[in-house]
View 1 (cartoon, rainbow over the protein chains, first blue to last red):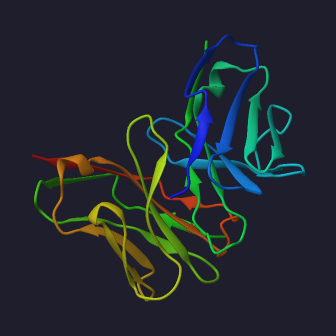
View 2 (cartoon, each protein chain N blue to C red; view 1 turned 45 degrees about the horizontal axis):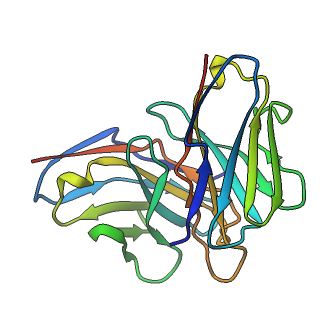
Amino acid sequence: GAVVSQHPSWVICKSGTSVKIECRSLDFQATTMFWYRQFPKQSLMLMATSNEGSKATYEQGVEKDKFLINHASLTLSTLTVTSAHPEDSSFYICSAASPGGGTDTQYFGPGTRLTVL
Amino acid sequence: AQSVAQPEDQVNVAEGNPLTVKCTYSVSGNPYLFWYVQYPNRGLQFLLKYITGDNLVKGSYGFEAEFNKSQTSFHLKKPSALVSDSALYFCAVRDGVSGNTPLVFGKGTRLSVIA
């Protein structure tokens, strides 16, 4: 299957700082990527849909000014957690699917564990 | 709006025995159903999907799932469990065939295979 990478795999930061997480589709192009958040022992919750060349679509309750998403190319989407606080500590996972072409499966990155002190 | 229910938080099974992880769904249109597996501190790995066609879907690592429209279920099964199958399993649904439609996940079921 297709490969999606994330960087970094884990990050620890101080409260008030910003953290950028990258999501890359390595062997395919993705017009759409998704960002999910997973708390311990819980399911994945969709945060936003990232669209290449346009603004992201955020789910209800997700602060767009806090979680900045940029989808600058067909292989890269970034999530920046601005002014991070301890409650932002979580496991962030991205996914991507090829645009059309018969591929209808989303492939997930390995996740980024964010710990805010 | 679509939703997925995984009624069991935990499933325990002895190695070599068959396993079933349950999933029921609710969608307004045609269901597109998926199973993913997550190992500790890892992302999700795709196991199998039902889009259309045969109700019995075969996937990775010997897993299969049966789509049952009348019972709105998509239970994951494996004839003979391995210790290495121990992980967290997620059922997911979306209401569009395109991969550019987000998935809605169940809460997950932790499978523990005991040697």
